[in-house]
Length: 172
Image (cartoon, rainbow, N blue to C red):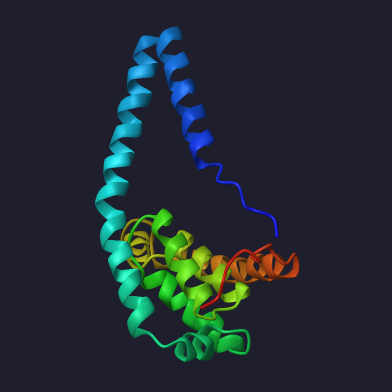
């Protein structure tokens, strides 16, 4: 059994060194980069704890059989529809979708439906659709959805076909 290496400390150290070098070469850009990093870190630290609490509740309250039935490998078209609806209705930045997706995968969601969920979260949001209708017109919003949803299905099918390496995930 091979031990997985955690690359995160090295990546963070590399980013810190890069910011320091940028600070030395161009003080203004270095300060700007550090302040931007601080702002994103504060944002993530304010959003992630409540998400992790909700994921804990999801793990406890939602039966694995429900996720398997709704989004599992045998769910078919219904699973894709559920994945699009859940991804569209979800709120928050995209980085929140990944722990949610992992929880769904552990509960028995198929890789295809996980990809549909993540793509829908990234590209379709109910408020975004409303803004599109208001500012760009209903025709634009409908056309974008008509092009986006098939694209999501195609991308998810390709990702399933290439069989992403998710062997490290332990399904509970």
